[in-house]
Amino acid sequence: MSLKHNVAANFISQAVVVLMTFALVPLYIRTLGLEAYGLIGLFVALQAWLTVIDLGLSHTLTLEMARYSAGSTRPSDVRGLLGAVQWLYGGIGLTVALLIWVTAPYFAEHWFQASGLTTAVVLTSLQLLGLNLVLRWAAQIFRAAIQGLQRQVWLATFTVAATALRTVGTVWLLVWGGGGVVAFFVWQLAVTALELAWLVARLHRWMPPRDAAAQAGAHAPAGPTLAPLRRVWRFAGAVLVTNLCAAFMTQMDKLILSRALPLQEFGTYSFAFTLGTAVAVFTTPIFQAIGPRLTVDIASGDESRLIATYRKASQTMAVIVLPLGAVMICHAHAIIFAWSGDALLAERSAALAAVFVAAYTLNSLVHVPAALALSHGWSGWAMISNLLACVLVVPAVFIGLAYLGAIGAALANLGLNVLYFVVAVWFLHRRYLVGQWRTWFFRDSLLPMALAFALGGATMLMADEAWGRVTTAGFIVVVWAAIATAVALSLPFPRRMLALSLARAAVLLGLRPARQP
Image (cartoon, rainbow, N blue to C red):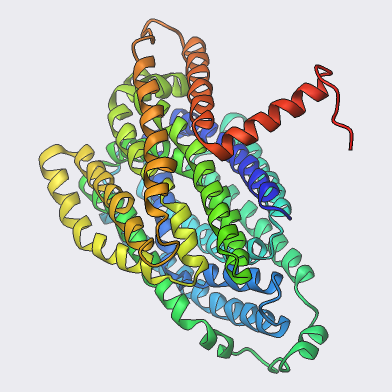
């Protein structure tokens, strides 16, 4: 499957998932309350922490499966690696589930400052939350393997279907079923279990048969073994440290604030974080698609093709992220009000959300260089960058919290992402694609960024606070479309894609004749 089709499928699925997920947030707050939404925010934060005990294996699986699809890895090797990872994941998952279940009573009674939820409700929610986390964590290795096999169109379709099932059930429970936060977590757990079972069955259909794997290489061992991990342990270990640091940097503020703030205020902070990171959600399709493609280009030894793929991905990322980031920063209050209908919530969370959007806009732009490093097998780049940032994050969060409150903790996140954007990518290009840093930084990132925020700032003068929710939402969509078009026209690859799309649309509408073969 081509890079274009993979990116399109991933982007469409991610867009649908994001729309369904974000559409439910006002419903959560209205039916469950900010305290219960604080627990949902904690659920999101703990998901990031669980990536730490992934041990770098999901990234390793994606890389090895991509190499197998390119003919660079034997079938016996990928079967052995997948079997070892499943065996290891099973043991770790059972341990984590037991740990969460046992410690939940302490956290329900002593950690959270809840006034509207009983201790029993918080306890049950935490236990269900923990089981859900473990199953979602287990599913990521099968998703990673399917991505590496470049079955990304199927995976995108499956993700949309699973999210639709989860969304429909949640709406029914909260609106017509009279369910509370416990019912919410029960339904999430049921859908996650079904999702995991389907992913396992589908992946094993696409794996090379055991007899074919045995003919292509060494015979498979009779029982479970971790021996296949020895071949990739350096890469996986470096990714483990990277994931640990990434979770530490991006989620430490949530753990600190979940203890320092009342649960209702933490719910407001979680709401702002959810909205702010929406811009980063749209980076996932490109990151998922570009990794295997860069790996194939590197294996081919064709550097010109590698540079072309890298620049196309960087420019595509800019077109997706920068217009959205500019609109969300310049019109944060209007977006929150149009989205939730709650003027007080918009007033409390707009500034926080704008800071998070700025942070994750920069973070998103760094995803393509990160994919380049991982595709080369240089997981040490992200590991070193994250280790250095970890030294700064805790004191930065505490200082920001002490002097500026919750928004100070958010500003600490922004500062770290500025360092990534300015310094870490420069360091990467001293080793790979030498000479391409200026092109990436100025032409593919900074110039379209300046254009997007200049246009976004100008449209702030046109907005009217007296507008209703529908008019405001329409204005935001028009502004986003205008900025996205301007950014696309400023970059070579998106400009060509836009012209091609318009030409095809003209043919379909009968405005111009089809080109003869």
